[in-house]
Length: 326
Ligand code: DGY
Image (cartoon, rainbow, N blue to C red; front, side, top):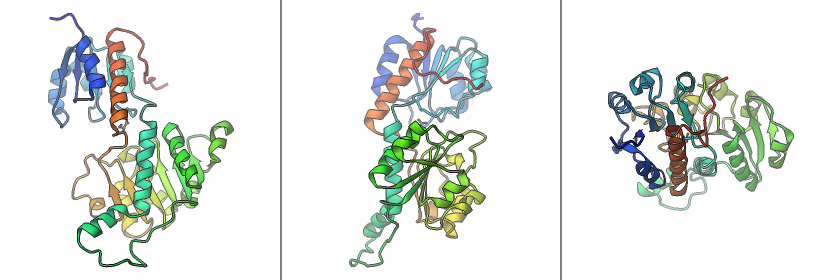
């Protein structure tokens, strides 16, 4: 017994986080590329004072029972925390932390990259060249919509939605947003952003980008009905959570021309099964949940998750706590 707090870290994270944890704690690190299977996770969390989780680890009553009464903190290595039953943690006095802020700009960069890549058909163009199909300059080859000067609809106008709006401003776009409530003028005026109902936003936008948390309200927010509100030329970008979009409805909409293209960083489930209809569609670009994947940002997330974990095991307030639901 070292006398140090016992912690489980469920995947290798950058050294900015791992080093301070290893120095201060008795560390059990699950170092595989794949997440620990559920039974292994429950076995290893038993008796821990703290755990650093990823969005692939489900923290629910079963997990908390397995951990036992000594667990003080769950520190999620993500800004999203839909993998954690925060109310169940609060009921047992377990603090929950996440990593807000540090990944805002990097996530908006990827949302922007997806938007541009889908509009200008970059993956298709790349495949076209590598497949040896490029014979000449073609007046009608791989045409797409202009991004500059078009209208973008941002669903969820929080930190990341606003960071995307800043990028859209650089392209002279008209900016519409939808959120639970209309936001104060001093938030929206710098972007020239106008509030719309979801239906109004989807009807008017050339590009729609999703930046909402996953909750019972936002699950399948984009479904067969809302897809029909969109323009047949529209591009849908999702860097939020996969279940915000009804994937079967999206596949149908992309196939029958209800909308023009989609670009997804997140899917439901993850990884997307190779026999999912979206995988076979040229007008659907899919990347493997990499929105925050810059070296700098992942390092900052690690440092922040470690700070939450260490504060929690010491019984101190977390630097970035997740508030339990009201
Ligand atoms: C998050 O932080 O919630 C992302 O989805 C992963 O960086």
